[in-house]
View 1 (cartoon, protein in one colour):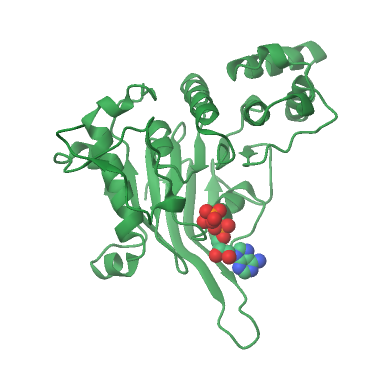
View 2 (view 1 turned 135 degrees about the vertical axis):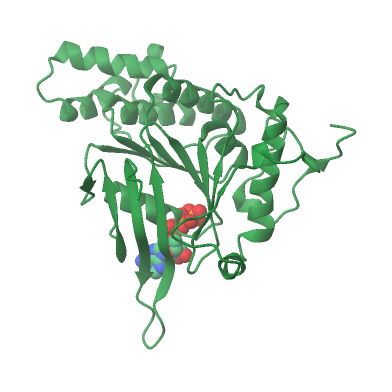
Length: 316
Ligand SMILES: Nc1ncnc2c1ncn2[C@@H]1O[C@H](COP(=O)(O)OP(=O)(O)OP(=O)(O)O)[C@@H](O)[C@H]1O
C-alpha cells in the first residue's frame, strides 16, 4: 500500500443515540491520503461530517474508529505541526496584527531573536497584503483583513499541514476573490500541504489538486476523489477559459445535486469504500451544458438543491 504524507485509515464517528435509540453514525470507512505539497478540498452537504474530519486531523476531536498518520506518526492532540484556520479569525484583540502573528512564531521557534521573529512575521503579513497594517489592532481591521491575519499566522508557523475550515465563508464575494488569489500565491510560493473545507465548487476548482466528494450522512463516505487536471498556474480571471473547467464543474455540481444522496447505489455498483474512485473529468468528453463563469455566478454546496444556473453553449 502506498504510504502518503497524511494517511487516514478507516475513520468513523459515532454519537450515542438518545435513550433506547440507535447510535448516530455520522461517517465510517473514511480512507484517503494526502501527499506532501498537495492542496486537497473536501465538499459535501451540510452535516455530512467535514468539520468533524478536520477536527480529528487537527487533534481537536477523537474519532470513534480509525487512525490518522502524518509524516509517519499517529496524530494525538493538537500540535504546531498542524495549523488551523476557522471561519472566525480568533485573533487576540489586545495585540496588533504583527504581534498576533509573532505570538505563534515565538511558540514555534522559541530560540529566535526578537528581530528574527519580527522579520519572519512581517514577511507573511506582506504576502497577504497587510504590510501597511502591521500595527493596527483587530478592532481597526475589516473582516477580510482579520481573516488575512489568521491565514498569515497559520502559514508563518510553517506547519506540516494546514487545515482550513471554510476560511472565506463569512466574506463578501469581492473580498473572498481577492483572498483566494492571495492564498493561491502563497501556496504556490510555499508548497504548503493543505486540507480545506469549502462549500464553493469554483473555489475548490481554483485552489485544489484534488477534490474529495463526500456523500450525505448518516453513514457518509468519501464517494469520489476528483483530480483537477488543469495546469497549476490557474488564475481566477482566466480559469473559465479552459474547457476542462466546465467539465470538472459540471461533474461536481452533478454529484452535489444528483448523486451525493445515492452513495448506497455506488457501493452496490462495486465501489470499494477503501479506494474511492479517482475521477479526472477534465480529461473526459465535452461538456454538454456550460454554467455561468465563476466570477459571475458561484454555486455553493449549501444551496446545491437549487438548479444550477445554466447558459446554453451558443450564448456562452
Ligand atoms: N455532540 C454531538 N452529538 C450528536 N451529533 C452531533 C454532535 N456533534 C455533531 N453532531 C452531528 O455530526 C454531524 C456532522 O457535523 P459536522 O459539523 O462535522 O458536519 P459538516 O459537514 O462540517 O457540516 P457543515 O457543512 O454544516 O459545517 C452533524 O449531523 C451533526 O448534527
